[in-house]
Length: 423
Ligand code: SF4
Ligand code: SF4
Image 1 (cartoon, protein in one colour):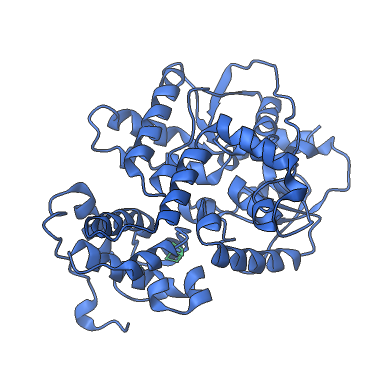
Image 2 (cartoon, rainbow, N blue to C red; image 1 turned 90 degrees about the vertical axis):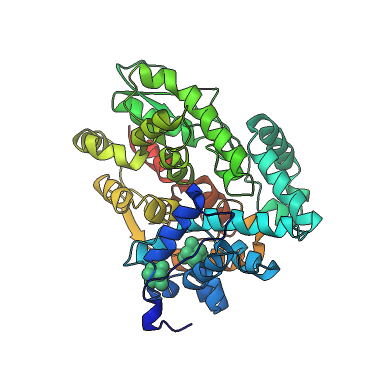
């Protein structure tokens, strides 16, 4: 798909059903920024694996342009959009500032709705899988019970299921001290069951630094699972529920809303945008997004305190490979902070080759597109293992579980490592 001079700026004529709608106008504006240069294609993981222009960002933008203009959409359109990881590597590469992640959210919904209206719904099995993911993953109690059962039966499970069930680990202690400085923590929907040490470890690290983490029990899934799996209204309702749960704490003066799963952080930062047209929630959603911080963004403030604490810790430290999740490095454009922090604590940190590429986890992608997901995982693990680490660290529960399924090397959240290092 070579770019011609008349394609330098993509002119989009919205179909009647999208004209003057917020999503339609937003999609049109995003598509209009694409100059067809193709720089993004080279860094797209699915293009690298499949070599098809339509499995890269430029091709997918073309497909979405067709869809919003009312041109025919087919199963093939949906397949190429399904194969996208939403890793947003293309956004980091794009010199024109094309907000691909937002466009693909809109484009997928348009394609799905149009195919549904043409009687071309997804096959029953796909619909059931997506429904089960939406309803199962977003209910912490139900998911926790299923995870415990899966962990008991783990040795008997077929490999494809065993990969999704981490070895059982006990939750560790939550700090009991109170501090004047308070921040909220999003506990997450699957993280407490899959890796129960991450939240207490985050709370203990901040407790040592004089900050008390508070969890609003009424808050739940950030909304990503429903929003990115065919139920945008349900995802928006999850966001509103979280805003309601957090708002009393915001009014009471919490300094920040802390995220230790970068996938959740990337979405909570978008609440303000996604709810901008909601007359009841728009203002509060914007405030919530403004207060959102990945935990790696907080710690530089405490650099001197951390170094002093670390001096009292025993040597030698581990050699670790750091896998920055796409939702951290591309979705939130946060880079370098974890490496700096761990280095300051005396840890030998390595970034592997192609560290900008997705590991294949990508939310529910590893369930919905297992073949591509496992190829990406194996490529990522080969690069990580080449740095000869004692431990691999990352910042998102999905990446941690996905990577751990393919290696004996321990895979942890980096905050767990900091918690272990500090006295
Ligand atoms: S989001 Fe990732 S997989 Fe999707 S088009 Fe962009 S780079 Fe490719
Ligand atoms: S890099 Fe940006 S402008 Fe160039 S083709 Fe990709 S999305 Fe379009």
